[in-house]
Amino acid sequence: MTGTGQRTGAAAPTDVEVAVVGAGLAGIGLGSRLRRAGRTGFTVLERADDVGGTWRDNVYPGVACDIPSALYSYSFLPQPAWSRVFAPGAEIHRYVKDVARTEGLIPHLRLGTALTGARWHDDEAAWHLTTSRGPLTARALVTAVGRLSEPRVPDLPGLGTFPGRVFHSARWDRDLPAGLRVGVVGTGASAVQLVPELAHRAASVVVLQRTPPWVLPRGDRAYAPGEPRPDRAALAEEADRLFAARLAGTAAEAELRERAEAHLRAQVPDPALRALLTPDYAVGCKRALFSDDWYPALREQHVTLEPSAPVAVEGSTLVAASGARYDVDVLVLATGFETTRPPFAHLVAGRDGQTLAEHWADGMTSHASTVVHGFPNLFVLDGPNAGLGHHSALEVIEAQIGYVLGALDHLDQVGGPLEVSAAAEAAYTREIDRRAAETVWLRGGCRSWYVDERSGRLTLLWPGRAAEFRERFGEFDPTLFPRPVCAQPG
Image (cartoon, one colour):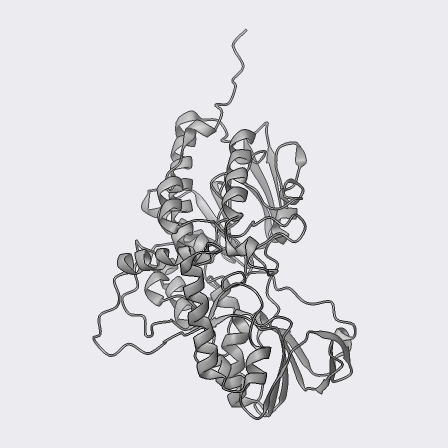
């Protein structure tokens, strides 16, 4: 699909009903549902030259879904032919591209078009957007940029002078040759997938670990020809039951920890190495990972686990907090993403010119994880408390899409802008905080990218079951949106 969409050729319209920012799973899903609802006056802005979001950007060796494939397609467009229990990243990317094509979204795409600013204009009841390819006006604005789109790069003294190749895992060097000495910074989801692959190709690998992750058995395998795939609805119900293990102090949490500890004992017989790999926090406090080859890779003779974070780079030498020094040819930064403070929030200014970043100074807030007071006709997909720590992100994304469609229908009826009340946003925030207080995400004894680093609030995850979110917020509720006041005739 590279090069398709409205990047070149006939001039694209400058006035649309709905502007969607981002062509990942959320943006393409919304575009598909808009088309199916008969709405054609929309455009999807994408700064890259292809659709796919995180599955376009992440091409490191071993990249794959970390939930069962059957849950990783739209319910209205199921993929019946995933090749494995956990689909490889390229296969997911291909699925998103196929959806964009088969759902007729190509004419609506503006690839190679970055959002550079968005400001609400009360007098026009519209959003004025500036982009890398010119201005655009939209009645409604939907951000669908995701939380794994802006790589986080550590501030390491000397990093800029490293003479070898250095890159973030989400910006993988496809031309990386085999037989090199590789340093990997981080032990999160990307590292757990790519390190075993690097162990097959590199002369040596050193993994710098600030905090060990909890790792659970994966059980990945290829599907046999003609083998039926799991039922999506049944698998979704099964996944939702896992939320019980995210409540601190429950029997389900203890059972999950026993399972993780058993996996570690079975794969790491050396007690000294096992001690270095044993977290001191609750399972699920940080993102729980799934792998059957992470621990075996760390036992390889040419793979070294350094149990401390890097503190400096001196020439080709990585200096760890422990004082250990490692000479490497390549430095891979598997250091995660900007999540709780999304960069796009600085670009969006609502009523009275306040930006989303300013509104979220104490952590992201919203109502229904989708709408924000002070920002009329704005809908945020995959934003505040819209993630799931036990299930597929698509469960919440699809509910949000349903909410947006209902809001647009209501907007057509009332004719004025939709702005959720401050009271509704405050009430939802209080509920989130109250429910989050009982979870391992706040009581598990760790620091994670789920929690806002300034306020200490859980701002990334929905602290409940996916089914509840769908039931409560899968449809638009107009009662929390004050009707616009119209001037009376004189």
